[in-house]
Length: 112
Length: 114
Image 1 (cartoon, rainbow over the protein chains, first blue to last red):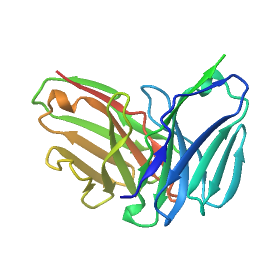
Image 2 (cartoon, rainbow over the protein chains, first blue to last red):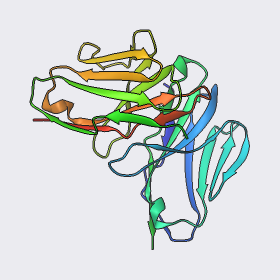
Image 3 (cartoon, chains in turn blue, cyan):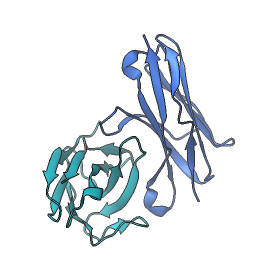
């Protein structure tokens, strides 16, 4: 069973702090990794994707990938109340029609 | 990013009727589209993978005769919920994959079956 695991939270951080969201995956053949944000009652929105080991930065967001440890994380700097949402980690492996395997999501609350 | 639309955004129907949901990729061609269902406070559940010009691949436990999927063109896929019942009430979301293999989601369709 190929799995993607996330801490369900809620993760609560004060405004302006760094929020750290973590995700582990079981399939070593996984090739691409995605972070989506989902507000309540809305569909997921792509935040970042990462394919290579290391860090990838985009504005206040940094994705970190460690394939040896099968671990991918998302850092949100200078957290804002508008960042409060559920963050979904998704992993795309080489086979199986390249469909995404989804984590259950981590709920983030940024407190003013 | 790429834009995916869904129609309708919200539908209320009587038990036993059929409901069709359209998913369109507006500014790119999508050889593959995905249909998801999400119950309140639950995670996304993949229902089926739809490839243009071929039959959809359904996930285990999803009835293909109840959830009919058609992907007749590179920009349109439809999901028809046949003989809908109250337990089919859910948030249905499609996504479309571009050549870079990123998935872009439509805004979702909230179905309520009375």
